[in-house]
Image (cartoon, rainbow, N blue to C red):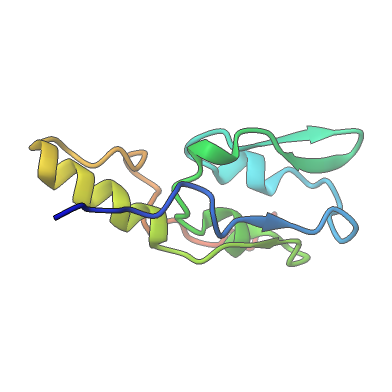
Length: 103
């Protein structure tokens, strides 16, 4: 039997036209997927996205979309199979990031 897992970042999309360049995605991403270039967010390292959903939850204009939990599930499964902790970024991941209304 062959096991397959979702690829990291498969569901992550960014609408650069809507982005206001606030940097919230850069601040909350546990794997440094984003960077700000010329006043707009850019996906710099899509393959490192674990699809935790923190970026989309914290984007004030809805420029980001991701199917939350897909990558986290993959990290948990791989961790269990390898007998190690999930590689999902530690605290602040897997949906535990709260939306900071003070931004």
